[in-house]
Image 1 (cartoon, rainbow, N blue to C red):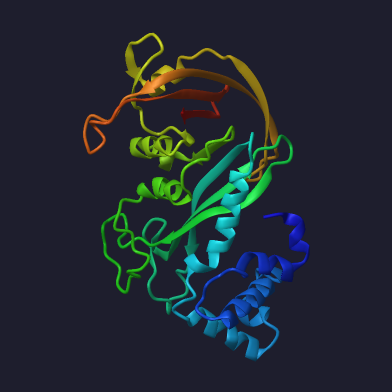
Image 2: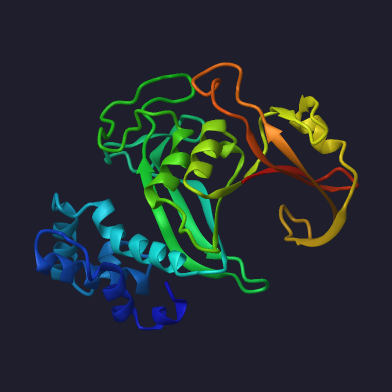
Length: 314
């Protein structure tokens, strides 16, 4: 996706939805028109976006068609994004994954929603994967490489919710979403480019690291599990203790944005890293898998206000 094309919304909309297969070419034309109108005024409601009542009704009819699904509407965009990523020879492409909550708690008439947050809210979980080429000072955003909507069938106390959407209900564990996103994108190209799946603490799952590497990807994740590792000297240890014992090897100055009434500030971060081998879990389905070679990266502030441990799987 080239941002300069966004100046011509009609041309941009044709790029996004011109190849959708919605069962009728008129639906494709309508999808293009509705998409361009929404892009022109994305914060407004649909009646305020469209130019008249006939246009509003046509948009609602489009969304009510069985063939007009989320997967079909997003397919041309994700396909184009993956094609651009594959042609980024010699580049590192970051596939940044994260989940957002779409909160519809106040819309009590909407059916099919699941639990969000602490279980008291209702809405949809939306797992996104943004493809980015990390050019220093000016990262190039390629677009969405994948997007998976889903709903929870119960809250943290396992209380069930009625009228749940069976189409969006996840039968697998929530942690599977990380691997499934990478697998939906497919194998990394056999070129000199590097595809890296980037995730937060929720992606610290042994099977996710293993499956990503099996597709010739790399992965970068924030540590939450204190895993058993093999150190460079061949001895066993625990990941967090090992990382926090590393001596500083470099420094990095970072500007933190202001929040909660506090002004922005500059912090001088210490950086250390080391090769290691991650041992498989001792229980569960992954216990018989082979160890995984990778790198541990620790970033911390001397004051102790910021401390981040990450694993890079190779």
